[in-house]
Length: 196
Image 1 (spheres, helix red, strand yellow):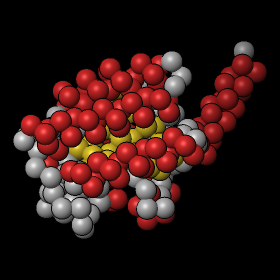
Image 2 (cartoon, rainbow, N blue to C red; image 1 turned 30 degrees about the vertical axis):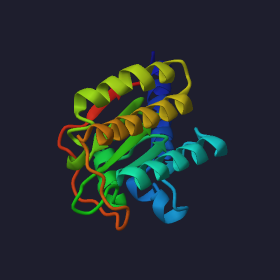
Image 3 (cartoon, helix red, strand yellow; image 1 turned 180 degrees about the vertical axis):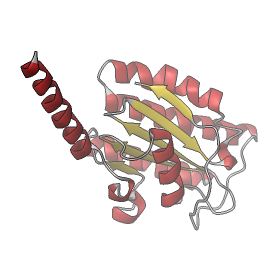
């Protein structure tokens, strides 16, 4: 009985140490606009170069056409914050969306937490409200994640978000903003959370 307790304690310590090593503090998640001029940070190594280039091209084209911005962050695990807090903080730190228009969104995938979060700025709330984002996640993202296709889920999710923004612009529900001068302040207070 004593040996069992010792191994349980050792196991708990090793597990805790592994979680700390695998987790990533916010300060270590690079802003893709500053590192490579793109929109995607994948510190977990989920996307291949072609997929990352495709997402960057898709989001750049969306930004040119509508002024809206989408950033993607794929991490191993959050540290000292919930995935929701990470998503909100990254959206604000990275300045996703135009100053004054608040038209940015961020998709955070936290593998170790088994979570995907989408934060939207107030300027996109009418186009990507919680219900619409939840439907995108339920239809396009989570089923792929459950089948082990994390990269496919990210690609489908970003495509669906971009299509929603373009569709809103076409119907007049969204007015494009100039492409110059990105900055960010606050995220919408009601993020969408889906379990992977």
